[in-house]
Image (cartoon, rainbow, N blue to C red; front, side, top):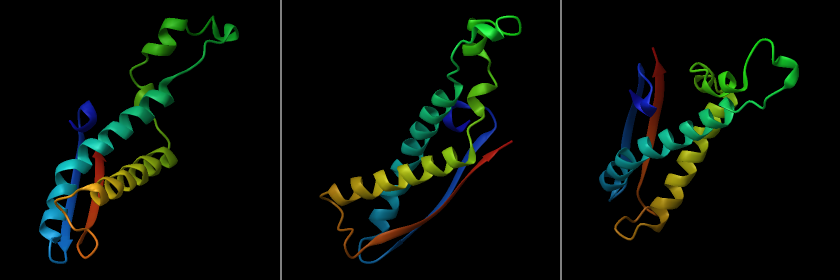
Length: 117
């Protein structure tokens, strides 16, 4: 139930390299899923906003436009890509600021996916 959605699964493999690669990969493993979840939720909220159009009054009410449960699931492929890129960039920035990890000579390769059933 990743991102609070039933049937959504986050999977990842985090392979550290360098002298502190194990710490870097643990840090990414422990923090990336929540960063990515936040980014996805924000993208879903943005995609669910629909402005009321008086011309649509016969087919849909203003209330319905904001409460259609299927609207928030439909984000574009570009939005998905943006969420991943934003989250990975934020992790890179956050990791560079961490005092306990030397990410100059160490790092992590991450392979991640989100599966929707």
